[in-house]
Length: 262
Image (cartoon, rainbow, N blue to C red):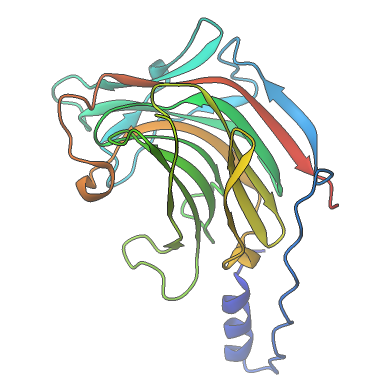
């Protein structure tokens, strides 16, 4: 059965000619406690583990990089994702990496120790996203570092809700948060916690952003993505310049927790 967001479901019911009951009242978002999660699996990134992860080879409009398997490597016990110039005549000016989990998570916590990538126009990230393409609905939670910065990180969630951005088909809620360090220079611990109706984003164990806004639509199983790419949106990620590539992000480890319902 194709998934419809709640508002679309009730609209479809009304248009079907049958009776159209009122939507149920929204439930109170779940609280997040110390007992909300239990460890499901972890990866110390001692190898590029293709039994657990896939190396993607796609791209999209606005991404100046083509994802390529060759850009991922393990160096000194850390997963290194590289953004490099592509040869002349390539479809895109850069090669990047999308390292995608084969398992999905429907509510839970993802925590990783990361040194993000420096460079203007460069985006490196820890992402949860519902991945069928084209999507029948949009669910996404992001921690993104824009490499032109030296003291902040962006948290974001994206869903389908009218009026969606006509260019993307979804609506997003970005939050740029000031930090006391450079995420592109040092390793730090980043986490996304997702429970029914609520998400929060932490750095080094401190909650930096929490949201319930339209989170009742965030219900679909999501893959974990570790990415590095170059953005064509200079107003958001900065212009392409000599610092854009080569550059890299490093992931020391990742821990994935399932939601216990508590």
